[in-house]
Amino acid sequence: MLSDAIAALRCPVCQGICHLGEGPHRAILCSAGHVFDAAKQGYFNLLTGKGTVFEADSADMVAARQRFLDGGHYAELAGTIASLAAEAMKGPDPAVLDAGTGTGHYLHAVLHKTPAKAVGLDISKFALRRAARLNPQAANLVWDIWRPLPLADHSMDVVLVVFAPRNPPEFARVLRPGGTLLVVTPRPGHLAEAAERTGMLSIQEGKEAKLAETLSEHFLPGRTISLDIPLALDPGQLADLAFMGPAGHHLDSHKTPGTADGTESLDTTAKFQIGIFRSRETRP
Ligand SMILES: C[S@@+](CC[C@H](N)C(=O)[O-])C[C@H]1O[C@@H](n2cnc3c(N)ncnc32)[C@H](O)[C@@H]1O
Ligand SMILES: [Zn+2]
Image 1 (cartoon, helix red, strand yellow):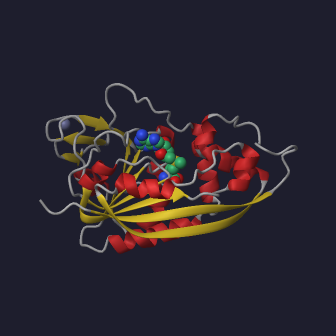
Image 2 (cartoon, rainbow, N blue to C red; image 1 turned 120 degrees about the horizontal axis):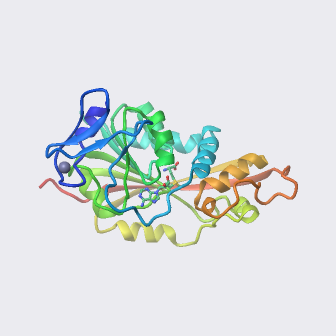
Image 3 (cartoon, helix red, strand yellow; image 1 turned 180 degrees about the horizontal axis):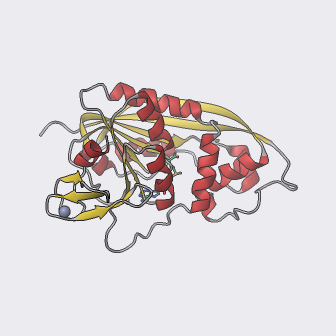
């Protein structure tokens, strides 16, 4: 329930305990009286003060991601994530944080399999509009992953990060001792044919070793799962795929990238890696 998720939050101004306000206007209130109103689409903006220096995904990029993910191309990835999260949420009070939740697609799969207390963070309001509609039981928050997270210590069983920035010390702080960090990243060769056609960014070698290294202070590495998903994409799907990622910031959304007449299809393979990490934190 949303009120349970909000009880796991800590006020970004004073670190006070939060609760969902009563009355017609939904708001998060903290014990010291700070108030964060819900946007009419249902998400909450906790980023007070000066704006962030990061470039949030645009409405066009979010629409492309939603169309592509709703097409079910990555259903196998969503199913695998949901099973791994379920395994890690067997306790009496399951709780999950989706860091960089985007449109909430993967969190939705997790919550469909395991009803849990859930928090979704993202810096893009456009993404959170969709996430709040898809996962109304979750606390969907505008927040910057690079800042201290507005969550209580040791409050989550799982932190899920799918193609989004990682803040290892904060992920370790909010996880329960022995909690699970699931990190989904692309492997070399991910969508290589599509990248070549459309100007999407390609994946560099050596990222796997770097990931484990950047997490090693706070996390013990567990299993790594590799998942290959062959895709046969029509031009519209190819365009959505190109716009939904970081390349969407500099591609023209009104042109189908990489096709001379906009009618050529393309075979390519999505190559994912799911890293499973265990928090080193012990009970204080
Ligand atoms: C490639 S998308 C992945 C979204 C979602 N996890 C998915 O797989 O559909 C990356 C997401 O990270 C968000 N993001 C990027 N930088 C961020 C930051 N510093 N804090 C919070 N979210 C951020 C973007 O707005 C975007 O929604
Ligand atoms: Zn406060």
